[in-house]
Structure formats: C-alpha cells, structure tokens
Length: 236
Image (cartoon, rainbow, N blue to C red; front, side, top):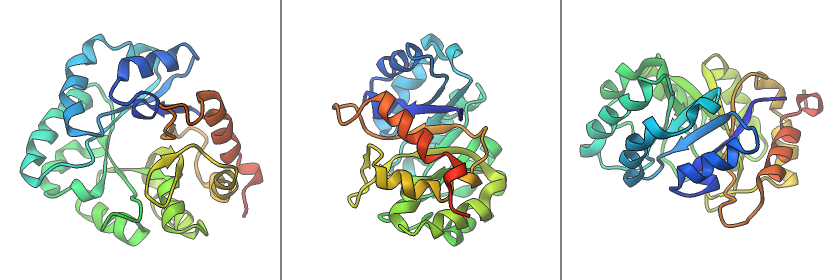
C-alpha cells in the first residue's frame, strides 16, 4: 500500500498534538505538520522537542501560506528548526518574494502547484518559471489543485511528466470552486486515477481533506485515496 497520511490541519485545526494522536492510534506513519497560518509557526517550533514524531517514517511541514514580503526573511529563518531535523518544508510559490532567500534551503524546499485563485504556480509553465530561480527545490504535487485548474487532468499529466524527477510529496483532496479542501468524492477518485500511474509507489501521500468538523472520517478518506491512486485502473 502507498504511504498515506494526513495534514494535521485537516484533522484538528491548530491542534497538532491531537492530530498526531489520531494518526498514531491508527498506526499511520506519514504526516505533514501544518503551520498554514503565520501565528501557528512559532507554537509548532516550540513544541517540536516534545512531539511524538518518532512514530512517523515521513514528516514534512507546511509553511504559512500568507505573509507580507517584509516577513519573508523572518519566516525562512524559523524554517531551520525543521530542515535541521531533515523535515522538508512545503511552500506556495506566491510567497516566494525573494528567491535568493529561499535558495539555501536547497532540496529541503518543496514547491507546490497552486489552485486557480493564485497568480503563479498553476501550470507546468508557471511552475518551471519558479524552479528556474530555485533549481535545487523539490516538487509537491497537489492533485486537487491541478484538477480544479484543469478538470480534464491534462494539466496534472503535464505537471507529473514535466516535473516528475523532482516529485517528493503529493497532496490529495477534493478542491471545490471556492478553493477549499473537501473530502474526496467518487468523481474525484475517477479523475485522480487518470494520473495515478505517474506517481511512484513510494511517494508520501498527504491528505488535506478537511474532516475536523465531521465532514468525513479518516478511514473513509484513506480508502478513497487508496482507490484514487490505484494505477491499474488509470487511463493510459
């Protein structure tokens, strides 16, 4: 079975300890620590030494998705707390204001493709433009974002073929028209199967389906993700 886990923010917004407990009790060993909001970053860093992360074979961290250009250097300096532990950090291209500041993170930096709201990072051409100034960075493929931008999944195929050698992590969820991360529908399962064979089996899959308010449950989302990523059923 593919290595599948969750973003802590999808399970329990801002309560990363509770989210980790939910995963550990189920024997899951893949997690993305969410610091999606700027105010979540320092509490997560302060808690790192006491978190039960030894239960996990893969840990990544999602960088805040919104901050001002004058806060960029401050954010990057704090990311050393994660990269010093060999945790890759996922960043949205639209907060890369000064690429030279991010370059020292090297391959620990994972650039994520974006939803249709964003001005950059939505297509292969736009992602290549970002990688041209951060050539050592890896790729975090958000299949839900890509489907929202291009429901035919042609854009997803292009991203995986054009950036597959950089692929380090996959985000999976339903992304609705308002760019919110919903539980995975059966229609999304069918769409994701079209590109599943192009995602290597060992790549960590992080579910971002928001289920913190009872929208779904962990077991259902894991089952649907596993079905969506069954490449034997994917289109050629």
